[in-house]
Image (cartoon, rainbow, N blue to C red; front, side, top):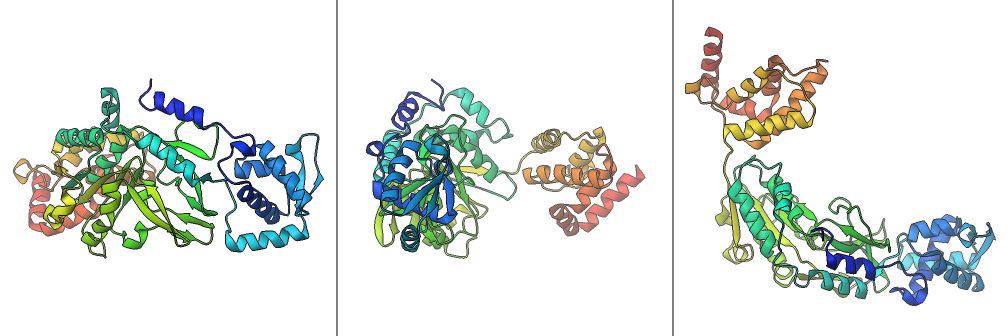
Length: 444
């Protein structure tokens, strides 16, 4: 079986067939009816097929509920074709009053959620015994295809993925810490999650398209979604409030924190030590979810246990000794990334140009290389970083387009170099050296 769709995943697909009647539903009939009446009240007039598209509920379930709502004088059918899906419903006065009361208590209108009990059982079934993993070599090779160098770091990431152990990755800015870590989630198998969860008649949003990538094959019950193992990241903007689940009155849902969104994948805490809040206080908040693989959130004051089965990754440009030993124990692996070699950043520079379909003169590569050669070799002696390689390729493209040229020339490359802020700053720090280099080039 395919690593990303194994026998266990096949069984999950079998279990999560679309329910076709109320007896097969994990949600209460009352919750479903309330959701339907809020939708009708919101639209005024709406076809059954449109309600199906919004909620993901089978038309037979909608028919059963709508017939009851009609009898209760909350809504009425006002037209349509032979098929029930084409029937249009309108809200009645009593239904409008009822919907207003419901909206005050729970304003959510959208996809039907999954019950909390069903969510919990499905997560347990998938995450129990998840590690150690047996990752095929072709998956490892494909994952790190675009990562240049850092073979020791790649090995550590593979070991982290196999055992589900957290790690610290540290080194100077521009050495590729975030990029390298972002690839790691591809080593992990996918997971099936609900888009929304119902708990005590409230709705919690779990699926986040910013962090969750949908797989090509999907569950029949569209309330569930198969995603690739998530890679969730936070940076210097992180604070303790963002680590909690908070209610969004505009959407009518509780929005989950990065701790919960990363379930089944990798959670990166980037730029550790640069947050406004004390980083150790933030790490203290993570102890329970990292240790127990579960976290406690509160929905209208009611406690709710959620899964937080992620691999923690901590990245910093600072000395790793800023981290308390208690937190280091919970991420026992480490990766030190040092500045890349000139051949490595040359490859990344050329790869970026090629990926953008940019044509360039051979002298462009030599001009880029010369920035990092030592002064003894006639170069500028600047410190190479992967970030330079990526940024300069993009800046050179922008300069070429602005100048309406067909190819990146040495002159365009010179302009790109002069506009890169970090290179400009390094040149200012060593102006005398830079002037000697320019004179040497003119003389030769």
